[in-house]
Image 1 (cartoon, helix red, strand yellow):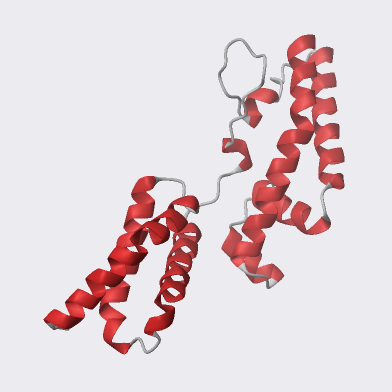
Image 2 (cartoon, rainbow, N blue to C red; image 1 turned 60 degrees about the vertical axis):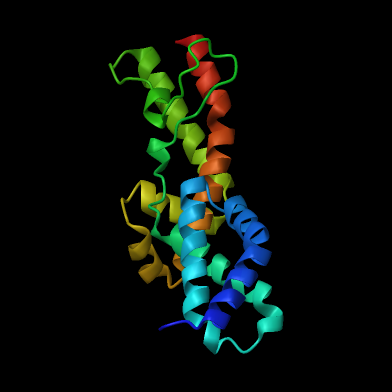
Length: 191
C-alpha cells in the first residue's frame, strides 16, 4: 500500500499525539523495555497498514490501546510458563543471599532416621499445602508438576482456556512458595 503525503502526515500526527500514552501502557504490561518496543512497533505498523480503512478516527486512541492489549496478550501466550521446580526463592536473613530452588529445600535421601523424618515432614507439608488450594488450582498444579502434562494437554482434558490454566498454576505456585517458606527455615535450623 502506497501512502499519499496527506495520509502520511495524518499518521505521523496521530502517532506523535498518542506515542507517550501508548508506549507507557505497553511498558507497564510487559517485563522488558525491549519487548515493549517490539510490541509498540507492531502496533504502529498495524495502524499504518489499516489507517485508510479505519472509519472512526475520533476513537483512534481506543483502537490503538485495543491493538496494543491484543499484542501484549499474544506475547504472553508465547512465553513458556515457569516450572515450580525452576522457581528460585530468596530467604530473608540468609547470609549467603543465594536463591534456592525446590530441590534445594528437599533434604538428600541418605536413609538416616533424621533424613527420613524430614523427607516425610516435607511431603506431609506439601500434601497439606496442596489440600489448602482451591480444587481448580491444585488440579492444574498437580497435572503439570507431578504428572508432567503440558498446559495444552491440560486444556484439552479440562476444556478450559490456556490462560485460565496458566493463571491457576501461577496462583498455586505463589501460595505454595509462601506456605512452605517456614518449612525451609525449620530445615535450615535443624539439619
